[in-house]
Image (cartoon, rainbow, N blue to C red):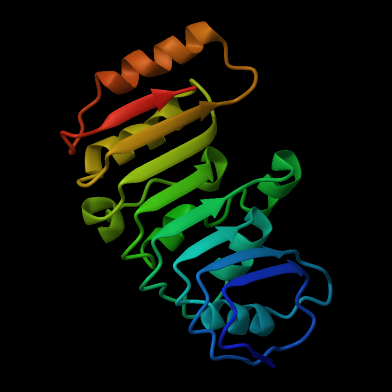
Length: 205
């Protein structure tokens, strides 16, 4: 049992091999979850873990953890969640966890209060058919990493520009092999793209 009412920061780095009982985490302000699957991973344990931290305001969720979260039935709703970061420690290895499956687009519908989002562009597998409410009304800052000048990648940024009603800043961090010329191309395309927010700054680095 995890019963720590005064805990402010929770970090979990391991596989899930047992069911945990998680209670009374009212003081939790940030969680960092790096789960990885093994032959002994218990999905039920992962579900309990995510439901236990669903009131956390800020979450670092590694790609391997995203797969386990999206396998929860039903998917937890993070009603008070305003900041999400999905980093990739080893992009080529971790990308295999989401290739051809569900990604960030599935999770966004469960984050109605999300204001800040940072993710590697690969974890957005598809563009949501129904625009998430957080993108329409709440999201103020988005940072997309490992960005390229490929059409499908630019299309992801265009989607956020078109639907981000509250968006104030879109930061694009390009992949290491993207040249200055390609960065300029990305900048020109995005600058000319339709945008919902009139107070939006686009930064490409």
